[in-house]
Amino acid sequence: MLVISIVGFVAFSAIVGVVFVNMSPQFGKGYGDDQKDRFAGLDNFENGKFVNQHLTEMDVNFFEATIEYFKNDPSRSPDRNIEVNKIDSIAIEEHPEEITYLTWFGHSAFLLEIDGKKILLDPMLGDTPAPHPLLGKKRYSQELPIEIEKLPFIDAIILSHDHYDHLDYPSIKKLKDKTGQFFVPLGLGSHLKSWGVPDNKIQEFNWWEATRWDGIQLVCTPARHFSGRGILDRNVTLWCSWVIQGRNHKIFFSGDSGYDDHFKEIGEKYGPFDISLLECGQYNEDWKAIHMMPEETVQAAIDLKSQMFIPIHWGAFTLAFHSWTDPVVRASKKAAELDMPMTTPRIGETIKIGSDDYPKEQWWDTYN
Image 1 (tube, rainbow, N blue to C red):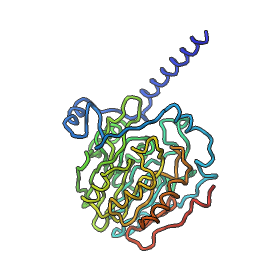
Image 2: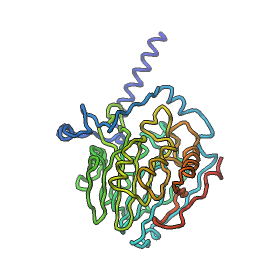
Image 3: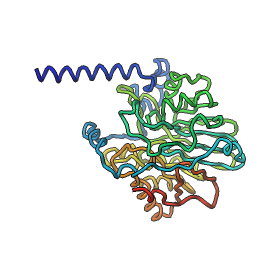
Image 4: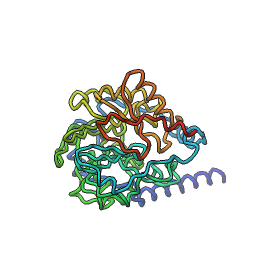
Protein backbone atom coordinates (compact mmCIF):
# COMPACT_ATOMS: atom_id res chain seq x y z
CA MET A 1 0.00 0.00 0.00
CA LEU A 2 2.87 2.39 0.80
CA VAL A 3 4.49 1.74 -2.57
CA ILE A 4 1.17 2.32 -4.33
CA SER A 5 0.70 5.59 -2.44
CA ILE A 6 4.20 6.82 -3.37
CA VAL A 7 3.74 5.88 -7.03
CA GLY A 8 0.35 7.59 -7.03
CA PHE A 9 1.78 10.77 -5.51
CA VAL A 10 4.64 10.84 -8.03
CA ALA A 11 2.23 10.29 -10.91
CA PHE A 12 -0.13 12.99 -9.63
CA SER A 13 2.77 15.44 -9.20
CA ALA A 14 3.95 14.71 -12.73
CA ILE A 15 0.48 15.33 -14.16
CA VAL A 16 0.15 18.59 -12.22
CA GLY A 17 3.59 19.65 -13.46
CA VAL A 18 2.76 18.92 -17.10
CA VAL A 19 -0.57 20.77 -16.86
CA PHE A 20 1.10 23.74 -15.16
CA VAL A 21 3.81 24.01 -17.83
CA ASN A 22 1.34 23.72 -20.70
CA MET A 23 -1.33 26.00 -19.27
CA SER A 24 0.80 28.77 -17.75
CA PRO A 25 1.73 31.65 -20.08
CA GLN A 26 4.86 32.38 -18.01
CA PHE A 27 6.67 29.56 -19.81
CA GLY A 28 6.33 31.28 -23.16
CA LYS A 29 6.04 29.45 -26.46
CA GLY A 30 8.45 27.72 -28.78
CA TYR A 31 8.99 28.56 -32.44
CA GLY A 32 7.90 26.50 -35.43
CA ASP A 33 9.77 24.07 -37.66
CA ASP A 34 10.32 26.73 -40.33
CA GLN A 35 12.37 28.84 -37.95
CA LYS A 36 14.19 25.77 -36.68
CA ASP A 37 15.10 24.93 -40.27
CA ARG A 38 16.54 28.43 -40.71
CA PHE A 39 18.69 27.98 -37.60
CA ALA A 40 19.98 24.60 -38.79
CA GLY A 41 22.64 26.14 -41.02
CA LEU A 42 24.19 28.27 -38.25
CA ASP A 43 27.59 27.46 -36.76
CA ASN A 44 26.23 27.77 -33.21
CA PHE A 45 23.19 25.49 -33.75
CA GLU A 46 23.60 21.72 -33.55
CA ASN A 47 21.00 18.97 -33.37
CA GLY A 48 18.19 21.38 -32.69
CA LYS A 49 20.01 23.29 -29.93
CA PHE A 50 22.18 26.37 -29.68
CA VAL A 51 25.71 25.73 -28.41
CA ASN A 52 28.50 27.78 -26.85
CA GLN A 53 31.73 28.64 -28.64
CA HIS A 54 33.57 26.13 -26.45
CA LEU A 55 32.43 22.96 -24.73
CA THR A 56 30.52 24.04 -21.62
CA GLU A 57 29.67 21.46 -18.98
CA MET A 58 28.12 21.72 -15.52
CA ASP A 59 28.62 19.18 -12.75
CA VAL A 60 25.46 19.82 -10.75
CA ASN A 61 23.38 17.44 -8.66
CA PHE A 62 20.06 19.24 -9.10
CA PHE A 63 18.35 17.41 -6.23
CA GLU A 64 21.09 18.38 -3.77
CA ALA A 65 21.28 21.88 -5.21
CA THR A 66 17.52 22.38 -4.76
CA ILE A 67 17.70 21.32 -1.11
CA GLU A 68 20.70 23.61 -0.54
CA TYR A 69 18.94 26.52 -2.27
CA PHE A 70 15.99 26.46 0.12
CA LYS A 71 18.13 26.29 3.26
CA ASN A 72 17.51 29.15 5.65
CA ASP A 73 21.01 30.66 5.64
CA PRO A 74 20.71 34.26 6.94
CA SER A 75 23.86 35.38 5.11
CA ARG A 76 22.22 34.82 1.72
CA SER A 77 19.93 37.84 2.01
CA PRO A 78 19.99 41.24 3.74
CA ASP A 79 18.75 41.45 7.32
CA ARG A 80 16.04 43.93 6.28
CA ASN A 81 14.46 45.56 3.26
CA ILE A 82 16.99 47.27 0.99
CA GLU A 83 16.15 50.94 0.58
CA VAL A 84 16.22 52.10 -3.04
CA ASN A 85 16.69 55.54 -4.56
CA LYS A 86 13.39 56.71 -6.02
CA ILE A 87 13.23 58.29 -9.48
CA ASP A 88 10.28 59.82 -11.29
CA SER A 89 9.08 60.07 -14.84
CA ILE A 90 9.43 63.86 -15.03
CA ALA A 91 13.09 63.76 -14.01
CA ILE A 92 13.79 61.13 -16.67
CA GLU A 93 12.06 63.18 -19.35
CA GLU A 94 14.05 66.28 -18.40
CA HIS A 95 17.47 64.63 -18.77
CA PRO A 96 19.47 66.35 -21.54
CA GLU A 97 19.97 64.26 -24.67
CA GLU A 98 23.72 64.82 -24.87
CA ILE A 99 24.37 63.06 -21.54
CA THR A 100 24.26 59.27 -21.17
CA TYR A 101 22.61 58.01 -17.96
CA LEU A 102 22.45 54.60 -16.32
CA THR A 103 20.07 53.63 -13.52
CA TRP A 104 20.40 50.21 -11.87
CA PHE A 105 17.19 48.45 -10.86
CA GLY A 106 19.01 45.61 -9.10
CA HIS A 107 20.20 42.26 -10.48
CA SER A 108 20.80 42.81 -14.24
CA ALA A 109 18.05 45.34 -14.96
CA PHE A 110 18.99 48.86 -16.08
CA LEU A 111 17.44 51.94 -17.59
CA LEU A 112 19.90 53.32 -20.13
CA GLU A 113 19.33 56.81 -21.50
CA ILE A 114 21.52 57.42 -24.53
CA ASP A 115 21.20 59.91 -27.40
CA GLY A 116 17.69 60.79 -26.27
CA LYS A 117 16.54 57.16 -26.25
CA LYS A 118 15.28 55.28 -23.22
CA ILE A 119 16.33 51.62 -23.21
CA LEU A 120 15.59 48.93 -20.65
CA LEU A 121 18.13 46.12 -20.30
CA ASP A 122 16.79 42.75 -19.07
CA PRO A 123 13.89 44.40 -17.21
CA MET A 124 13.06 41.74 -14.64
CA LEU A 125 10.95 44.06 -12.50
CA GLY A 126 8.80 41.45 -10.80
CA ASP A 127 8.92 40.15 -7.23
CA THR A 128 10.13 36.58 -7.83
CA PRO A 129 12.42 35.21 -10.59
CA ALA A 130 10.38 32.05 -11.14
CA PRO A 131 7.28 30.87 -13.02
CA HIS A 132 5.38 30.80 -9.69
CA PRO A 133 6.04 32.71 -6.42
CA LEU A 134 6.35 29.45 -4.49
CA LEU A 135 9.24 28.35 -6.72
CA GLY A 136 11.58 31.24 -5.91
CA LYS A 137 12.64 33.77 -3.32
CA LYS A 138 11.41 37.34 -3.28
CA ARG A 139 13.28 40.49 -4.19
CA TYR A 140 15.37 42.06 -1.40
CA SER A 141 13.68 45.45 -1.80
CA GLN A 142 9.96 45.97 -1.28
CA GLU A 143 9.74 48.53 -4.07
CA LEU A 144 11.40 49.51 -7.34
CA PRO A 145 13.10 52.84 -8.11
CA ILE A 146 10.01 53.58 -10.22
CA GLU A 147 6.95 51.44 -10.87
CA ILE A 148 6.43 50.18 -14.42
CA GLU A 149 3.19 52.12 -14.75
CA LYS A 150 5.02 55.39 -14.04
CA LEU A 151 7.86 54.84 -16.50
CA PRO A 152 7.81 57.10 -19.56
CA PHE A 153 7.62 55.61 -23.05
CA ILE A 154 10.47 53.12 -23.52
CA ASP A 155 12.08 53.31 -26.95
CA ALA A 156 13.54 49.80 -26.75
CA ILE A 157 13.99 46.75 -24.56
CA ILE A 158 17.17 44.72 -25.01
CA LEU A 159 17.14 41.14 -23.73
CA SER A 160 20.09 38.78 -23.24
CA HIS A 161 18.31 35.42 -22.78
CA ASP A 162 15.09 33.82 -21.62
CA HIS A 163 15.78 32.83 -18.00
CA TYR A 164 13.23 34.06 -15.46
CA ASP A 165 15.61 36.46 -13.74
CA HIS A 166 16.12 38.28 -17.06
CA LEU A 167 12.91 37.77 -19.04
CA ASP A 168 9.92 38.32 -16.76
CA TYR A 169 6.42 37.64 -18.08
CA PRO A 170 4.53 40.09 -15.81
CA SER A 171 7.03 42.86 -16.58
CA ILE A 172 6.77 42.34 -20.35
CA LYS A 173 2.96 42.30 -20.19
CA LYS A 174 3.02 45.72 -18.50
CA LEU A 175 5.75 47.13 -20.76
CA LYS A 176 4.75 45.84 -24.20
CA ASP A 177 2.29 48.61 -25.03
CA LYS A 178 4.64 51.41 -23.93
CA THR A 179 7.76 50.06 -25.71
CA GLY A 180 8.80 50.80 -29.28
CA GLN A 181 11.17 47.92 -30.14
CA PHE A 182 12.52 44.67 -28.69
CA PHE A 183 16.06 43.56 -29.59
CA VAL A 184 16.59 39.91 -28.67
CA PRO A 185 18.75 36.86 -29.47
CA LEU A 186 17.51 34.23 -31.92
CA GLY A 187 14.35 32.37 -30.98
CA LEU A 188 13.43 34.49 -27.99
CA GLY A 189 10.89 36.45 -29.99
CA SER A 190 8.52 33.47 -29.89
CA HIS A 191 8.00 34.05 -26.16
CA LEU A 192 7.28 37.73 -26.71
CA LYS A 193 4.79 37.05 -29.50
CA SER A 194 2.89 34.60 -27.29
CA TRP A 195 2.61 37.40 -24.70
CA GLY A 196 1.10 39.87 -27.16
CA VAL A 197 4.14 41.76 -28.47
CA PRO A 198 3.53 42.51 -32.19
CA ASP A 199 5.88 40.84 -34.63
CA ASN A 200 6.90 44.18 -36.16
CA LYS A 201 8.30 45.31 -32.80
CA ILE A 202 10.71 42.36 -32.48
CA GLN A 203 14.15 42.05 -34.05
CA GLU A 204 16.17 38.86 -33.49
CA PHE A 205 19.95 38.53 -33.83
CA ASN A 206 22.66 35.90 -33.93
CA TRP A 207 26.10 36.49 -32.43
CA TRP A 208 28.09 39.19 -34.26
CA GLU A 209 25.03 40.52 -36.08
CA ALA A 210 24.56 44.27 -35.81
CA THR A 211 21.98 46.90 -36.60
CA ARG A 212 21.87 50.68 -36.62
CA TRP A 213 18.76 51.96 -34.89
CA ASP A 214 18.12 55.72 -34.98
CA GLY A 215 21.87 56.37 -35.00
CA ILE A 216 22.68 53.89 -32.21
CA GLN A 217 24.68 50.79 -33.13
CA LEU A 218 23.61 47.55 -31.45
CA VAL A 219 25.74 44.42 -31.75
CA CYS A 220 24.62 41.03 -30.48
CA THR A 221 27.79 39.41 -29.13
CA PRO A 222 28.58 35.97 -27.65
CA ALA A 223 28.14 34.85 -24.06
CA ARG A 224 28.89 31.49 -22.44
CA HIS A 225 25.63 30.37 -20.91
CA PHE A 226 22.43 28.47 -21.76
CA SER A 227 18.68 29.05 -22.08
CA GLY A 228 15.31 27.51 -21.28
CA ARG A 229 12.11 28.26 -19.37
CA GLY A 230 10.39 24.88 -19.30
CA ILE A 231 11.23 21.21 -18.95
CA LEU A 232 12.08 20.36 -22.56
CA ASP A 233 13.26 23.65 -24.09
CA ARG A 234 16.87 23.84 -22.90
CA ASN A 235 19.04 25.79 -25.36
CA VAL A 236 16.40 26.12 -28.08
CA THR A 237 16.77 29.92 -27.90
CA LEU A 238 20.06 31.81 -28.03
CA TRP A 239 21.78 33.71 -25.21
CA CYS A 240 24.03 36.71 -25.78
CA SER A 241 25.72 39.88 -24.61
CA TRP A 242 25.33 43.32 -26.24
CA VAL A 243 27.44 46.22 -27.46
CA ILE A 244 25.57 49.54 -27.42
CA GLN A 245 27.29 52.48 -29.12
CA GLY A 246 25.85 55.97 -29.26
CA ARG A 247 27.28 59.22 -30.53
CA ASN A 248 29.52 59.78 -27.51
CA HIS A 249 29.56 56.63 -25.41
CA LYS A 250 29.91 52.87 -25.76
CA ILE A 251 28.44 50.39 -23.27
CA PHE A 252 28.88 46.63 -22.92
CA PHE A 253 26.15 44.52 -21.31
CA SER A 254 27.23 40.98 -20.46
CA GLY A 255 23.94 39.23 -19.83
CA ASP A 256 24.89 35.98 -18.07
CA SER A 257 28.18 34.32 -18.92
CA GLY A 258 30.96 32.14 -17.71
CA TYR A 259 34.44 33.51 -18.27
CA ASP A 260 35.96 32.72 -21.67
CA ASP A 261 38.00 34.32 -24.43
CA HIS A 262 34.94 35.93 -26.04
CA PHE A 263 35.45 38.92 -23.73
CA LYS A 264 38.87 39.56 -25.20
CA GLU A 265 37.51 39.04 -28.72
CA ILE A 266 34.73 41.56 -28.12
CA GLY A 267 37.23 43.98 -26.60
CA GLU A 268 39.46 43.70 -29.66
CA LYS A 269 36.58 44.25 -32.09
CA TYR A 270 34.53 46.89 -30.27
CA GLY A 271 36.49 48.21 -27.29
CA PRO A 272 37.35 50.30 -25.48
CA PHE A 273 34.10 50.72 -23.56
CA ASP A 274 33.18 53.70 -21.43
CA ILE A 275 31.50 51.31 -19.03
CA SER A 276 30.81 47.56 -18.90
CA LEU A 277 27.90 46.03 -17.01
CA LEU A 278 29.29 42.65 -15.99
CA GLU A 279 27.71 39.64 -14.35
CA CYS A 280 29.00 39.13 -10.80
CA GLY A 281 26.76 36.92 -8.73
CA GLN A 282 24.83 33.63 -8.46
CA TYR A 283 28.00 31.62 -9.05
CA ASN A 284 29.30 28.32 -7.73
CA GLU A 285 32.32 26.14 -8.51
CA ASP A 286 29.94 23.50 -9.88
CA TRP A 287 28.60 25.89 -12.52
CA LYS A 288 31.44 28.38 -13.03
CA ALA A 289 31.38 27.54 -16.75
CA ILE A 290 28.13 29.52 -17.10
CA HIS A 291 28.48 32.09 -14.27
CA MET A 292 31.74 33.95 -13.67
CA MET A 293 33.46 34.13 -10.32
CA PRO A 294 33.92 37.74 -9.10
CA GLU A 295 37.65 37.69 -9.82
CA GLU A 296 36.88 36.61 -13.39
CA THR A 297 34.42 39.49 -13.70
CA VAL A 298 37.25 41.93 -13.07
CA GLN A 299 39.44 40.18 -15.64
CA ALA A 300 36.59 40.33 -18.14
CA ALA A 301 36.42 44.11 -17.63
CA ILE A 302 40.12 44.30 -18.45
CA ASP A 303 39.73 42.02 -21.49
CA LEU A 304 36.98 44.27 -22.80
CA LYS A 305 39.21 47.35 -22.43
CA SER A 306 36.68 48.91 -20.06
CA GLN A 307 37.36 52.30 -18.55
CA MET A 308 34.94 51.41 -15.73
CA PHE A 309 32.66 48.53 -14.82
CA ILE A 310 29.60 47.85 -12.67
CA PRO A 311 29.19 44.42 -11.04
CA ILE A 312 25.64 43.24 -11.77
CA HIS A 313 23.52 40.11 -11.23
CA TRP A 314 23.52 40.65 -7.47
CA GLY A 315 21.75 42.88 -4.93
CA ALA A 316 18.17 41.76 -5.69
CA PHE A 317 17.68 37.99 -5.51
CA THR A 318 19.17 34.86 -3.97
CA LEU A 319 19.82 32.31 -6.72
CA ALA A 320 22.97 30.63 -5.39
CA PHE A 321 24.58 29.58 -2.11
CA HIS A 322 27.06 32.38 -1.44
CA SER A 323 26.32 35.29 0.89
CA TRP A 324 24.48 38.13 -0.79
CA THR A 325 27.45 40.52 -0.42
CA ASP A 326 30.15 38.04 -1.48
CA PRO A 327 30.05 39.14 -5.16
CA VAL A 328 30.68 42.83 -4.58
CA VAL A 329 33.19 42.27 -1.75
CA ARG A 330 35.33 39.90 -3.80
CA ALA A 331 35.04 42.00 -6.97
CA SER A 332 36.04 45.14 -5.04
CA LYS A 333 39.14 43.44 -3.67
CA LYS A 334 40.24 42.10 -7.06
CA ALA A 335 39.50 45.38 -8.84
CA ALA A 336 41.77 47.19 -6.37
CA GLU A 337 44.52 44.60 -6.90
CA LEU A 338 44.37 44.94 -10.69
CA ASP A 339 43.76 48.71 -10.68
CA MET A 340 40.49 48.26 -12.59
CA PRO A 341 38.04 51.12 -11.86
CA MET A 342 34.71 49.89 -10.49
CA THR A 343 31.57 51.77 -9.51
CA THR A 344 28.91 50.56 -7.09
CA PRO A 345 25.70 52.57 -7.40
CA ARG A 346 22.80 51.98 -5.06
CA ILE A 347 19.66 50.50 -6.58
CA GLY A 348 17.89 53.43 -8.22
CA GLU A 349 20.98 55.66 -8.24
CA THR A 350 21.44 57.34 -11.62
CA ILE A 351 24.99 57.82 -12.85
CA LYS A 352 26.36 59.89 -15.73
CA ILE A 353 28.65 58.05 -18.12
CA GLY A 354 31.93 59.90 -18.55
CA SER A 355 31.63 61.64 -15.22
CA ASP A 356 34.61 61.95 -12.87
CA ASP A 357 32.34 61.33 -9.90
CA TYR A 358 31.22 57.70 -9.92
CA PRO A 359 29.64 56.26 -6.75
CA LYS A 360 32.00 54.09 -4.72
CA GLU A 361 30.16 53.90 -1.39
CA GLN A 362 30.06 50.45 0.21
CA TRP A 363 26.35 50.82 0.90
CA TRP A 364 25.84 47.08 1.48
CA ASP A 365 27.82 47.34 4.72
CA THR A 366 24.84 49.02 6.39
CA TYR A 367 22.97 45.70 6.18
CA ASN A 368 23.87 42.38 7.84
